[in-house]
Amino acid sequence: MTPTDVLRIVFERFRAGDRDGAIALFHRDATFTYSGPGGLHGTYVGHDAIQRFWALQDRLAGGGLVPEFIDLGESGRRAFLLVRIGKPPGPSFLRVVVYEIDDGLITAARVFEDDPVSAQAFFGSTTN
Image (cartoon, rainbow, N blue to C red; front, side, top):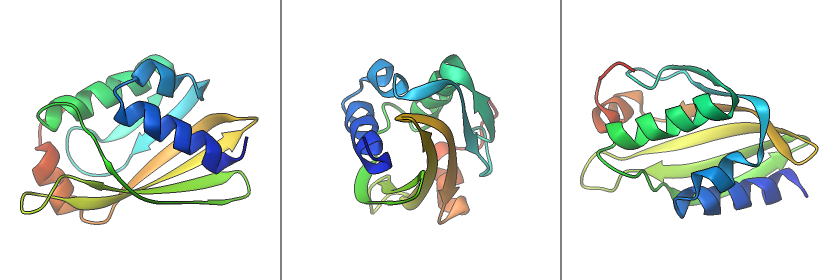
């Protein structure tokens, strides 16, 4: 499976609410880093912590987060996912997630928001 194949499956499962199915494609010691402002900030290590991050993200978004797919690319063992979070006219912004994938499993992910102010407005400024 290519890195983009892995991400397509993870994204489909995540959007469908199958978080257990999505996390199955992460290495057990994978890291998920959110460097933006607000309550999501931090590095989450391992399946349980990443699932807690997803649950916190859902809660801060006011319910289940369903990102809109825009694009996907890869370079070597890295894959790049571009999504839109939120829907205009309300707060919305683009998010890039860079994934590192080894042997068909995600070992690391790092989130970048194109507009941190909109991201903070969308997710609120609650601490985790």
